[in-house]
Amino acid sequence: MKPRLVVLTGAGISAESGLRTFRDSDGLWEGYDVYEVASPKGWVKNPGLVLDFYNVRRQDVKAAMPNEAHIGLAKLEEKYDVRIITQNIDDLHERGGSSRVLHLHGEIFKMRSVTNEQLVYDIHEDIRLGDVAADGGQLRPHIVWFGEDVTMMKQAVMEVLWADIFVVIGTSLQVYPAASLLDYVKPYVPIYVIDKKIPEVETRGRVVRIEKPATSGVAELLSLL
Image (tube, rainbow, N blue to C red; front, top):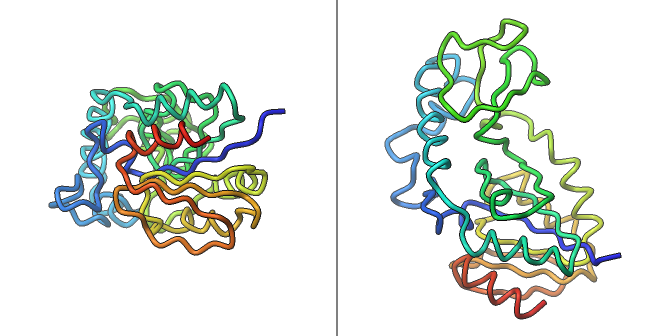
């Protein structure tokens, strides 16, 4: 049995692939009120704006390529049972070669019915008003908006509870409930935190801090493990 290595990733790992993080000063949500484009209330108010916003995001992700951090994590599967939990909606982990990826906040290349969350479809082009699911419900991005339940949290918690090694890459640990996953790491499990600006990490375990961007940080991680 390979040791289980669980990785929590955030926007910082995709930033080096050209996908801007909305918390940066030049963030992709600049000019938008976040609740206008990423909340149920914003959807009800102006669904066309929300669809347009995510249509642009989808094209940005299509144009992006996985970077050395994504590829490096996939290489770790040679020695470890790697489980990736990502806050990102892009597919760069999958394209980088990782075989087990759990998307906490949804996926940009999926869409679902507004009236039935179980009716989920693949989408690589635009979603438009009038595009409907099999039940007649308008299709919307399969994204967890502010104020919506993060339905994958239970599965993510189970992954963390079974971790032999836990790694955090490119996340501010400010977005909940994702940030609370650290609370489920068992005390004896080593934790590696990679970020160009290391966030505060309160934990009972041993923490190795690698204050570097994701690509060079993962390269260092590979040399340490």
